Length: 323
Length: 178
Image (cartoon, rainbow over all chains, first blue to last red; front, side, top):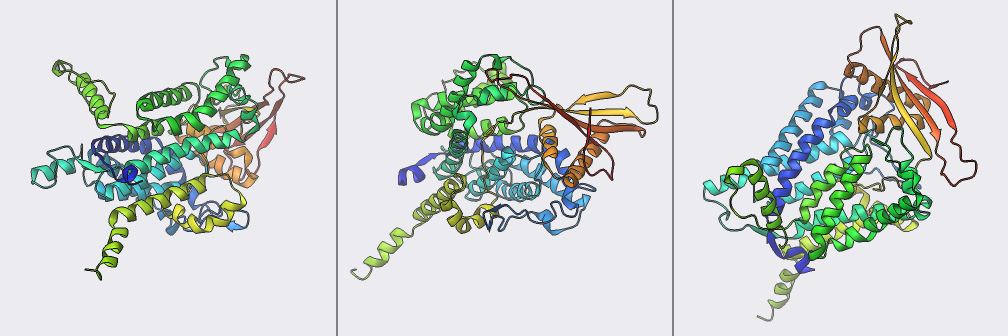
């Protein structure tokens, strides 16, 4: 237990993850503006009486499940100044997260704005948006603990220039911030598989066939796979096993990790090629960064710099394996 | 020295590392319970942890994409026509944006008043987005048919009535047409 949570690991992967997360947030908020405007702009859904004006009430049985759900928009009248101000603020904070400048403050702003924008937005958001909310909290914890900005950040550079911190050598940190992200990711896949496993369509192996028959709106094009029920049944079982066992278990085995992550990237790219989904593919691939090792991050950055600066890339690029 | 032993032991237990371990383990336990299917057990304990999940924005309602696969092949389109000139041809727009599609897909399952609010909000946005002129009207159409698997008896899908939501402030329920 002590080793799992407190062994000293490199802070570089978390720094890289933070940069990716900040970039994702900018993309996310730019793409969702129309929906936020629909809720919080002039005549927005949030401010229509009887719609989302009060805190949502999700009731299971006779117990209300809404205790302490909150949003800054629950406590005020419609104001374009507040809406656009918060929107600009969250974009700025996302940029701050990406660059690693005022990381602690930016992570808190991102968390407050994300929860505020999403909690009253019942329609047009799904579990991918929920994941953005969850990640913003976890990044706030990692940032406030001081680990998210130790590498690849302007904060670290500033500390270095004024002689503070220990950025000269490899920056080490305890493993628990990584575990927060990693366990959450595995939980997403495992419980998704568990829910599917309880459904008749998935048990009978017909789920993917039914999905491939929704050709009119949700598919980008019809690959004709519904004509091959044996193949779609194989895909159905494959998805179940991958979500229930392959990812949540095998990703913890170091020699298997890269292969599992690569299969995950292919899995999500496959979804986005065939189906109209939003954000889920992007955010899941970004979260995979929490499983990268220091060497793998260095390898990715070396490749990127070789692509950006091709004439300066005659140095050897080490393979991504190992940690 | 002997008197100091309990104090030393106490500081060993309540050090920063152990506190973090306990907090992270608590967080994981709550995550697991929150993600389990709802049972009498989860119902019994939910009041112990829901405040934490909601306060921190961690509440998780399920991740299963296509957990229950619909048996309908829906097709959503936007119809634009010139109300001032009935002879002018109308045109249809496909809804390509996945989030827009997700938004409009929720409309038919709501009560009529809510359908009216949601469709009006969406169509007002599309009116601006498509730069429609003043006399151009916009409607949301849903065409649908049942999905029938190939090896099922009477393997013929049934077309469902088209649902139409016009951009009318007073409209409360969708019209059935075609």
